[in-house]
Image (cartoon, rainbow, N blue to C red; front, side, top):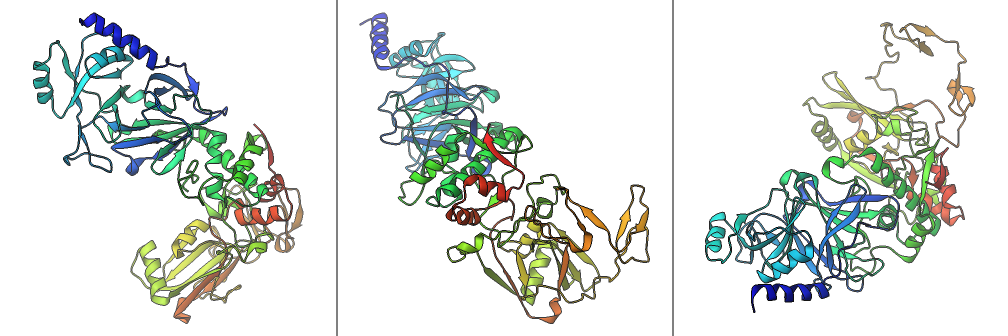
Amino acid sequence: MNRKIMQLAAFLLIFTLIPPILPAQAAGDGSDMLRVGLTHASGALPAANLENNTGYGAGYRFGYFDSSLSFVELARTDSSQTRISMLKSQNLWYGGSGYETTSNGGPLVGCYHIQVPGVYYNYTDARNDAEIFNGFVAWIDGTYQVRVGSYASSQSAQSALAGMSFNGAVVGTSSYGITVVATGTNRILFQFDGGAGQHFGVMPDVTGVPAPRTWFAGYKYEGGFQYRRMSGGDVTVINVISLDDYTRGVAPYEMGRSWPLEALKAQATCARTYARIQLEVHKHNSKGYDICNTDDCQVYYGMGSNRSDWGPTEVSNQACAETAGMYIWYQGKLAETYYSSSHGGASEEIANVWTNNKAGDFPYLCGVIDPYEADLADSNSYSSWSKTYTKSQLTSRIQSKLGGSSPVKSFALTYSPTGNVISATIYYENGRSHVISGGEEVRSLFNLNSIHFVVNGATSGTPNPDVPETPDVPGNPGGTTGNYVISGNGQITQQDSNPYIITGYGDVSPLNSRAADSRAGTVSTPTATTVTIGTSDKFVFTGGGWGHQLGMSQYGANAMARRGMTYEEIITFYFPGVNVARG
């Protein structure tokens, strides 16, 4: 059979087996698409495997995601190819559990190839010749090529070329190239190199199932996958998915997956809002994705694993479906919807937790006294906790965190009106002191579960000899007592004994006797409790809650839902002044 007849036969065979290339299509069914980093930074991989989830699609489509995250198909496998691996285009060897950068005796996927002469304008023509030459199709900088073999060095590729019947050329890829192989083999299915600006993408399934799922690193994910070699390094794996589908992969991991429906609806709405904000702030854009999959952002494991007690449930999916497209707003802007497991009785103003924020920056992230968490104290392992240090242990920890060698003499804690510790001052034997501002810094210093705590049972302190009774005010070295105002030009004047405060809500109250405000929880001026290290050899920190103390308490939301409250009521309680609406 001559070459032209062979080409025609191969073309007809491939035309019947390979469906036509599809136009650009969205990776999910939502209007907003999201890139979720699954492996990144030090977790990037030399090779990443995918496997079709049986019953949820088969085969793969290869291409890239355009600027709107619509998928542009360049090539595809048939439905029998259920396991593939994406390799950085360097020499890699398969070692049984994965592809490695050092020789282990397994199959080699080399980074040098022989290019067949000719120009190809579509995948079908390129695939036709690839079959004839027992090679594979590559898409390099916008052009289809046919390549043969994989060799560890240019020299070995040149030697192989010398024995071939065509005038080919030895080629490789740039440091951004991705080679796709059948997992466990060195059989190349496709190669992609779009340089630094074009990144390889995979959309699972060629059979047309409505919601394909794919295994990656022990978890099942919906949507598509993008592979980026940041600065030419290992492979960063990104899940490209709609916001609503992403939310289904967050809610059951950030909150109990079988908790009350209204609590899960509040969680889903918080998670969706937080994720959408990431599309605007570009926190992780330099890493190639919009949001990470850890608690640095939100925990995301897609559709779960093989564990029967892990992953989405009927009620968590219902919560996401019933709130689909719903977001939390404050005065027309998306709200910062932070949440944590529990507060121990009260949330806190963001400026008192993370000091890079100013008071009033986020009025809805304020201190809210929470009467609901107590309903579930028996089921919340962090409703009360304690941590004990000896004198030497506490001194060592403080010195290891703050530095210095002088022994610690005492420390003072400052409480917010809602009973949370918002700063600490450490006093040393050499007369110096160190102020730790912000609840999160204090929590880290003492390695505690929350900032809602007391030490050795103290709720009001004894006078601390290290703290001046009349602290200096700038411009008045002699010290002051009473209430003072510093004007815009720095002038200090003493006020009468009955000053009043006007709050952001328009409430007027005496400065020194402010009534509790159920909306904000800011009930009085801060007070100080002093604990002197020298008076005891044991220091017991007792408190309640787990997390950063901002926004919604998840256990509180659970309790509110059990009392019959709606998810909107839960959200507006923990984020005063917001509204829930479609957007």
